[in-house]
Each structure stands twice: as C-alpha cells, then as structure tokens.
Image (cartoon, rainbow, N blue to C red; front, side):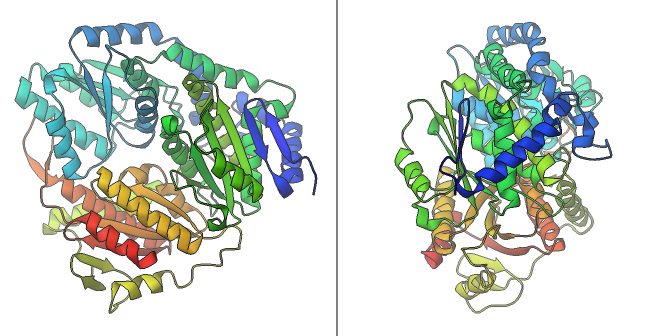
Length: 575
C-alpha cells in the first residue's frame, strides 16, 4: 500500500488508504474527458444521450452570479417587511424548498431586528395545531414555497393558514401576510395572483428543487433572517471560479466527487456525516442532494446524517466518513482520530467561518454532478419519487369513495403496539427477529442498511427515542441506520429507497391521531373533504405500497397511545 494516501485540495483532505490509486485514476479520467469544462458549458452528454430532464435543470450553475442581480429589490422588500412590523416568518414547503432555508435559520440564527424563521414541513395534525397556537398572525409572514406550484403538502398548508389568518385579521388584510416563491407559470403563481399575495418571487425554472439553495428559494428566507446574502453568494462564486483551474487536485468539488463515487463503486457506499453542531442542519440538505440525485437505476450512495458517533468496532467496511467542521471546533476530534487509526476512509473539510457554507452548497452540487458521471446515472431526475405520490393519491380516492382508508391486517399486537408484517406472529420480538433474519454479514461491502420512517409528531422526545433505537440497531447489526420524518423524507431520501439496489430494510412508524385538522378545499372557503390526519395516513400507506411494489422489506408499527413509550419498548428488544 502506498505510504502517501491523502489528497489535499484547499480546505479538503481525503484519507483514502488502499483506495488512493483508484481515486487518482478517476481524477485523471475526469481531466482527460474535460468533465468540468463540459459541466460549465451545460453539456448534457456527460450523463445521458438524451437531454430530457438535464438541459433544463442546469440553471443552478449560474445561481451565485444571477441571484446577486436580485439583491437590490430583495433588500428593499426585506426593509418593507420589517417596517411593517413583521417579526416572524413561517416557511411552508417541502424538500428543496425547505431544507436550505432550514440550514440558514438553524446555522445563522436571526440578526437583531430581522425575522425569526420557522419551517413547516410536516402534515401531522399535531404539528399544524402547534404552529397555529405558536404564532401571532399580526406579526407573521407566511412564505409559500414550491417549484412546481402544486406540491400537495405546501398547498394544503397554504390553504389552511390563509383561512386562519383571514379569520383572525380579516379577508382584506390576510393576503399581505403571504408571499410566494415558485416557478413562472406554476399553479401557485396563479393562486397567489388570484388571492392578491403581498409578493410573488419567480425563480429561474431551469433549477431543480434540490439544487436551488443559492437561488431565490434559499436566498429570500436568508435575507429575511438578516444574513449578508451578498457575502454568502460571493463565497459560492469562489467554488464556481475554482472549476476553471488546470490542476484537478486543486478543485475541491472534483476531488470530493471522484473520491466519493469511486469508493461507492467499490462498495463503500454509506456516506456518513460528522458535522459541527452549529452547522449540523447542513447534513439534512446534503442528504436530500445526494440521495435523490444518486439513488436510482439500481445504484445509490446512502447519506447517513446525525447518526451517533461510535467507536470503530461498530462500523462495517462500507463506511466513508465526512467530517465538516468550523475552525476551532474540536468536539469530535477524538472519535475522528480513532476512525483514522482504524483505517476507515475519511474526508475532512474545515470552514474558516459560517459564510463558507455558501461555498459548500455550490461545491457539493458540482461534486454530486461528478458522482452521477462516475456512476453512469442522471443526477437531475427523480423517477421513483412519483411512485409514492401515485399510491397516496390512490389511497385518497378510496377515502373519497368509501369514507375510509385501507385497513391493514395486524400481524401481532402487544398492549399499545400493533405490528403489520408479512405474516402472523405470536410476539413482537418474533416479528422483528424474522424481519432481520437475512440481514447480511457485517464484513461485506455495499451491504444492507436500516431506514426508520417515522410518520409521527417530531417532538424532541420522539426524536430522542428514535435516536436511541437507531443507536441500538447500529450496535447490534453494525449497520448504517437512517431516520426519516414522514412525509418530509419522501421529498429527500424517498427516491433512493425505491431506486437503489434494494438493500434497505424499512421500519415504518405511525400513531393513532386523536386531534385532527381539516384541509380547506380552497383558500378562502371552509368546505373540506379530507384532513391532515387523512393525508399523512394516506402518505404512509402509499409509501409502504410503493416500497412493497419494489420488493423492499417493510415492517409497519402503529402506536395506539404514546409513541415515545412504544419506541422505547422496541429499543429494549435490541439493547
């Protein structure tokens, strides 16, 4: 093995061990085929012979420069909003529309005098009710954000809160509390004009949702927080400028893309993030970018976000770790050192300050595009996302026709826990033992993973209990374990779950809904044909059906009472 197995590229170090030569060869091929130059010229043939869903998805390459042209009018808008007494903003969105704003809100916080930003991306009725109670309509600006303009969750949020604000402030004042961010000609643009929204921001339609962080979808909420968006975009421009360098080793996005994808080809396909606490929400954005871009055509790279950092003996040989840290943060230093000593491949990225996140957004978008080239797939489409939506719509039609959703046969019930599996069982322990019976050997590369899908109210207690279960599973099976909150993850990792090589085992959690909330058929009208409780139930049933149709292993658990207590009982089975 070569003694020097580290590639350094500006603020990136890639520790490759016995994969060093493979990555060097991949970088040489990237250079010989002019991949970076071709990306800059929007050459769709890098990924496919067919321009469909590529040529009209590359506008993100120009986002840093193009968005700067909008800053004067955006700053005027923010000043107007502040002068009109707004102190809170609630973003109604899913996936690409919500994840970058969440990073900005959680990482930067709110500058004094600007708006505090909250994200609503759960259709669970308890979450809706909590947001209703939490915010003073008089001081709250609602940001309705969806590229397509027809995302069912986002439009449902909009209708509900538009009616709520109309009831509290009156029909004439309500529209001034709503703005839209969408593509030109979308259904939302039409609705926003009809309802007389305060402002409609029309984004470049040639940008896919998960690549939209540096477009208006991310930058409008960032500006409302008081972030210096010009500085953020200038940092992103540095990453863009680096693509013209002659030496590919000096281009972080090239090194990241070549290294991650080359290791994935060799079976090291669990990309595990260890991120500084202050910026850890960046992992959720990365998770969507990588999972939805690269989990298809029977291939995939599994991003693993916010998993507990354990000693090396609890990890299998399919892990590649990525440590993204702010300068001066040594909180994970000891764990990183142990992983290095155990010769796990490792990527280290150090940011001098938080504004370098702008550079990271763009760098990872380019890197993901390069990974698509290496894997031989189109990173800009999402062919399997529609499957869960189709199944959910089928469930909703049944509800409209019969007045109820499909009832699933319970395999075993113990107290307040119901399990739906492939057959009848005497105990829950037996059901899970059978579920994990064929879980493959922990020494193998490209092995299985466990995905927890929680269609629950994501309270701090629920998240904590899910993390405890996750760690117990990780220790027992030495497996990558992910957590997705439904339906949010359907717009993120959902593509990979149905599109990859079928390696996942899926544990689906639901709960009985005792306080439901109706969804208005139209904004401004009180008529309703279904509720948020019905919607989230249909989404969980639809995704289960879509997974089963792809021959995935799924076990469903319903909690009739407290989910926290139920999850803790399940955790004890694996501890």
